[in-house]
Length: 231
Image 1 (cartoon, rainbow, N blue to C red):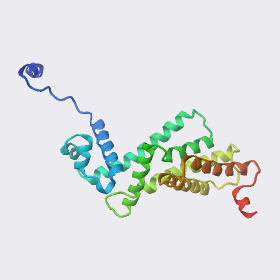
Image 2 (spheres, helix red, strand yellow; image 1 turned 90 degrees about the vertical axis):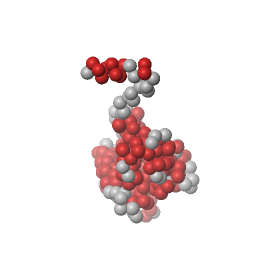
Image 3 (cartoon, helix red, strand yellow; image 1 turned 60 degrees about the vertical axis):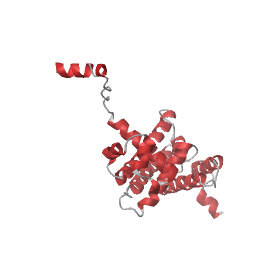
Image 4 (cartoon, rainbow, N blue to C red; image 1 turned 180 degrees about the horizontal axis):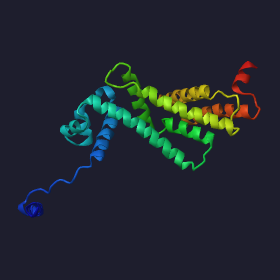
């Protein structure tokens, strides 16, 4: 042990480079995934290569291969990371609302997080859509993420609808399961419309607010959507 200590202490005296510091493996993995997402968003998933990701991250190709081995594993890890990022952004948004934000404010937070209105959210939306298309034809990309993730989101939103009913915000006869399906479809559809430039942000929020007004109108005794259609 003494000899090892002297060896390390005197490396600089011999003109040798210092020993490298201990690598934080989670930090290195995150750095590589960040580089992967930038390349994928800029050039498309089909154009991603391990060598290109290594160049983007300014590390060696061997380092990328050490953590992810193959392009397929890197892409699957990227998909998992996207879902984690989405959940973290939603959690941060909800936390900022305080301990008891209310059902409507919570639903508006879901919508705001999903809407591609800045660079980060546009990049997320582009990658998520690209992954969904790729999963239909590439057996190495699991398509369960595009089923399991929305299923969990549907369950959370349906639970919020039930809370809205019990709090008197929504009509007691409202079908929470159906409304959750409609709301998720609305979020995805409007999000894509904003992404491609067919809708602007202000109109998107106004449309979503109109939908929520329809649910609240049923609770206040005003004509709901179904009644309005029949008139």
